[in-house]
Length: 374
Image (cartoon, rainbow, N blue to C red; front, side, top):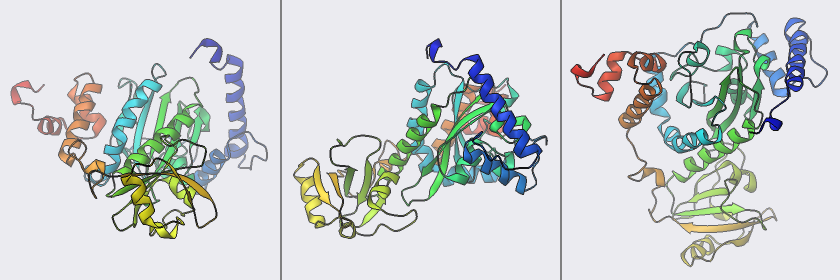
């Protein structure tokens, strides 16, 4: 980012002054704002925090859930971890030199993965960037994580927009991650400590969450994949709708974009292709076999979509079930522990603390010989 595109000092000061004014009105005087000093999701979160008895001046600690609960969270969210891994790795390029890092949580706000330049010498960074930390709104007040999981939309929060005084050093963007069944399965967060405000990260985190959703959808068993776009838009974009179909024409999974295009409500069973597309399902299979390219297909709603039909060469198994991605839980855990050690520059004690496990467990999981332990 060139200097002229950085927020000027007066702009930064004005932004922080508006946030402080909003804090005085809502948190000190306990009055509604009545003027647009904050994004609406921030005030809603503040009000929820006040309603459960939290106070801005309270000292907070970033507590971890029990070791067994953290293990269960990792085990239960293996598909999410596998789908997110390449996306989170690519975030490093987009956020280079910004000092922001990525946090992945489950649907309850428990951290299941961390990636990026976490300064382990800074307790404000190290305290939140740990596997198993509970970053839900009830635990740590207003953050991008809790707000995202409550409002189920991408958000951006800067400094004092966080509820507690102790968390006013953070700036963060968050976006929900929707599973193939239309339910929220977790969220992706980009956080910095005492950093320059980067509201563009809200767009980046939303796009990254969408890429994770697409990987989760493609990981579901299917015989036919339908890539949906509106007429005039070429398929192949991250915003494409993705619909997985079995050999009988039953829809096995679809991403958020496809659900929006087809009018399928969250959590609603999409049913059979013939219930949404006003063409025989055989037409879609034939288009895939003949590699006809995108077809304009009518919907029963009267709308038309551009549909690119592709056969899954793996049969009814989704790509995430292949040999390259179907890693067992043990390998996922080992990879996460090895990364924590790398992030701690080989300091096993620091890595163990970040993961919330003992040094002995780190050594055991990595299979290090006793002679190499320090």
